[in-house]
Image 1 (cartoon, helix red, strand yellow):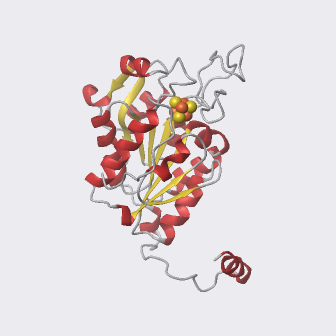
Image 2 (cartoon, helix red, strand yellow):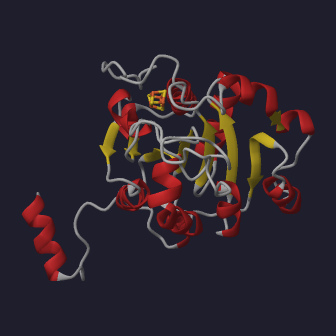
Length: 280
Ligand code: SF4
């Protein structure tokens, strides 16, 4: 697609991040976006390299801080399509506080977490979504903690769109990201994106065999209670749009922030303006 840059990814051959990114690029194109109106903000980790491999505006942010940057980009330039990407370590550990507040603020952007349940870039430490008993370099006797349930966190924070996807199921993944892009508000897509180098438990085969596709279940994503039951049911893993509030109105629409901000607004503190001038 037009969204592919000329940089060759340095991800390991077979990494799930390839499929996750391909689906994002195709979904962006399919929803009528182009590189001139798209801004990708990435965190730190293997997934954080995505902004280099996609042809669009992009910013490779600080660890765990991609969401506040994305929020600023969107509020200053509401005409842009903003995609924020990161990994499970980036988003659910150091970035967990930002995640909760981005969810409740409901700014219109899509957050794709490439969840491989391990820290890949730093060579295989347990992450917030690593399974209990999983043996890694930092948990040689197996992790002693239950994993974070990111969708429960999102639901509790008042999410208006929660989905789960799988990088290897190309068509479903693209379709789920398209629905996230089209949602008016903060759309969260936890995407299983296997790390073939450091995680021999949460593999392609595991997800292929275990994921329950919500399209086959006749699930109605507007049914909050059904979504809550699915999210809290740890015996199954679901793929698809789990919850969507179809009445959602984005933060910027609610607060009349729909014009691009061409200059620093009147009333901004003088020292903040000095800081901006110093930078630019
Ligand atoms: Fe992908 Fe894992 Fe390699 Fe990172 S270490 S590029 S997550 S396979």
